[in-house]
Structure formats: structure tokens, C-alpha cells
Length: 229
Ligand code: ADP
Ligand code: ADP
Image (tube, rainbow, N blue to C red; front, side, top):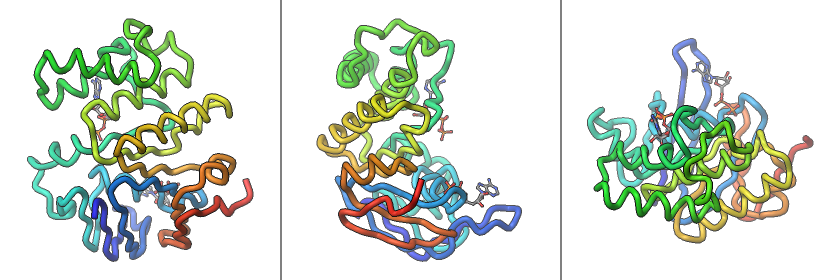
């Protein structure tokens, strides 16, 4: 089992219960949509997976690591196996496309020779090899998200966590991003993606986990979005 939550609670310091006893198992190579109203707990669910937050109560294991009991010096080992993609891209504005992606490999001290080869390989995969010398501001939103995806996959993570990756993109560009995520899933990565995009969820049918008020309200193998937009 790749990700396993057992009775996970997350209570923030101000007393907000973001998750209230969530139990779920996500297997290797699954593609999961997380849906539900704003404030339901989707981002918290994902932040626990990439160890941005720690559970208040319950058991969480990711890639065999017990996240709640993880020693700080082990955090990098968990994170290198997880790629994170955000709605607002979060590229470093003063670095080129190439440097934004290569940096993620430098952080884990990958060999220099490998960095160049692998960085160009993933830029090719996302269709942006020719823009390697551009700065993020010189790219469209869809292109910037492709760079963020390249950065997320460059270290070959087992899990990709994506928080509304198409939230800032027009429909056509969004479909391009979804095709890319499906390709990455096909190549072996598990994808957990929070989304409010009804059309995508209802067209690219996958497992749907609906979170409402900190609990899992639905978990369906080929689910639907299930809310009005
Ligand atoms: P979603 O991603 O579904 O919109 P979140 O996980 O962001 O939901 O938020 C769940 C609940 O936790 C909300 O009530 C939100 O306001 C609250 N919350 C999120 N982050 C924090 C935080 N750092 N401190 C306090 N409350 C938070
Ligand atoms: P976290 O604090 O959870 O590690 P960050 O926002 O710092 O998240 O990093 C998100 C992604 O951006 C990671 O893949 C990381 O390797 C990459 N990253 C962080 N800082 C830089 C940087 N200065 N240049 C390029 N990529 C970076």
C-alpha cells in the first residue's frame, strides 16, 4: 500500500478540525480525484501526504514511512518520492525553465551529468525543450504549469500530488495538462489530484474521493464529480 490513513485527524492550532477521522488506502499506480466543497479538507489531506503538515491523531504511512513519527532528518527522503503541483505554479521567477527543473535534482544532490540529461528529458516530455532558456514570465500559464510538472517528476517520484492544477487555466489548456498527468500515471506514478473541474472528472473517469466537512463522504472506483458548479 502506497498511502494509508487510519483514523486521521488534523486540528490546526486555532482549533479548526480540518480532518475528522479519515481512513483510506491508495495503491501504487492509482489515479485519484479529490473533490468536495471549499474548506472541506482537501488541501490538508494532500499536505499530510507530502509532510507539509503532520497529523494530530491517527496513523499515516506514505511509501512505507510512518509520517506522524518521522524524524526531521528523514523528511527529505519522503519528499524526494513525492512531486507537488500547485494551482499557481510556484516557479522561481529569476531562474530559467531549465534551472527551475534542474534545481529539484540539485537539492537531492543528483550527479551533475545526470541532472542535465534528465532535465532535458523531462522538458522534452512536457513539450518545452525549446523553451529551456526562457524565464517563467515569458511563458503562458499552461506552459508554466508544464514546467511545474517537469519539476515535480524530474526525480521520478512514486506519488504526484496536485492541488487544483488546472484552476488557473482555460479549458483547452486544462485538457493538455490532464493528458500529461494521465501519461505520467501511465508511466507508473500514483496521482492524487484535488479539483473543482466537473467536466474533467466526469470525462476522464477515475477513482473519486469526496471530502466533506473533514470526512470521506464518497469513495467510488469510477466516480463522478457529484456537485453543481
Ligand atoms: P480545501 O482544500 O478542501 O478547501 P483545506 O484543507 O484548505 O480545505 O481547509 C480545511 C479547513 O481547515 C478549513 O476550515 C480551513 O479554513 C482550515 N485551515 C486550513 N489551513 C489552516 C491553517 N493553517 N490554520 C487554521 N485553519 C486552517
Ligand atoms: P516545500 O517547502 O514543501 O519543500 P517548496 O515550495 O519549497 O515546498 O518546493 C516545492 C517544489 O519546488 C519542490 O519540488 C522543490 O524541489 C522545488 N523548489 C524549491 N525551491 C526551489 C528553488 N529555489 N529553485 C527551484 N526549485 C525549487
